[in-house]
Structure formats: C-alpha cells, structure tokens
Length: 114
Image (cartoon, rainbow, N blue to C red; front, top):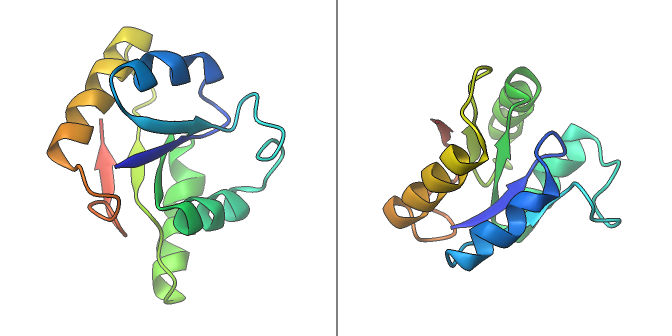
C-alpha cells in the first residue's frame, strides 16, 4: 500500500513511516504537490495508486464519492477522527494498516477510519 499524506498532516511523518518500510509521500513540503485542490489530490493519488490519509474528512469523502459516481474512482481514503491520536499513534496505525492491506489497490474506492 502506498500512501499520500494530505496537506493537513506534517511532512515530518514521512521519515518515520519510511523507516517502517512504507511507501509514503506528503503534500506538506513537496513543491510538486503543494497547493493542489482536493480534487487534484484525489486525481494524483489515483494516478500514483496512493491512498490519501487525511483529517479533512468531509471534503475528501465528498470528492471520493463523486469520483466513484463519475466512474474513475480513487485509490482509497484513510480518514482520521477529529480527536485523533498523536504522531506515534498515527505511525503505529498506518504501519498496522499497511500490513493488513499490502497491495497498492487493496483500498481502491474504500474508506477506512482510524
């Protein structure tokens, strides 16, 4: 499973996730991705087969559902609750999720809540 961290998540998560063997990119700090609209993030994630990890639940659920209705779908949404845990919690949860869904397309058109 490949991941794309939405702009709401700090790019400093990339290094510890990569240390655990995850293939992850972050919008935060990436000039190629910075400033993309949510719709473009969905498109980029789909093109790269990267599930999007986000706290921006309402926007991405709407756009993800629209992508499915439009017949193009998305690479998966990993939705974080408003209260969430700390960085250590998130790293652990994403690591566990990657072991449960190892293939790039395992989360295609799915939503998972952490």
